[in-house]
Image 1: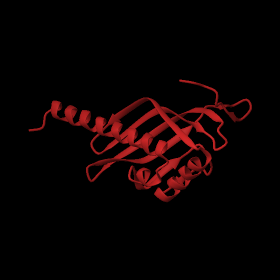
Image 2: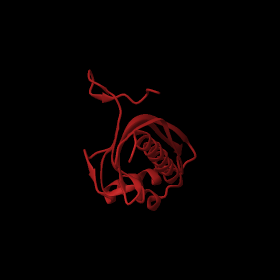
Image 3: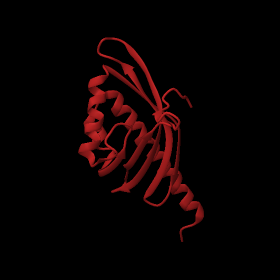
Image 4: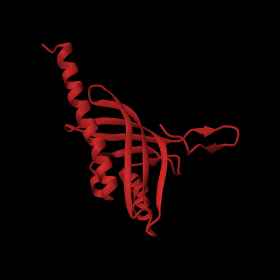
Length: 152
């Protein structure tokens, strides 16, 4: 018989695995490794990223969104902060703050900006994969512009 403690223990193990997967995202971005990123998303991932269009559907579109970042920066630093997950049986959702910054090809550095990120995860063949992500900045309704100078 499965007990409540068994479910909690499995949820704890799943959360550790999910956090490790998000850590692999950080490593892959910093290594500018599109193939490593490919392994961390579902093939049918849907991404609502900071850049147009409104939706990036499928792994090819998600990787096409990362590729210019790797060209823009000579070196990349990707930071995830305050990562929180709620884990269910085969699905999980979470949120965090993220900042992408680095060194430009001309040697200048940029501090980037903090964004809000939401993750939807699915456990497929024993691995937690990102099935959905959304990145956003707060909106100043009075002028219609994103607020990009906030820090967590």
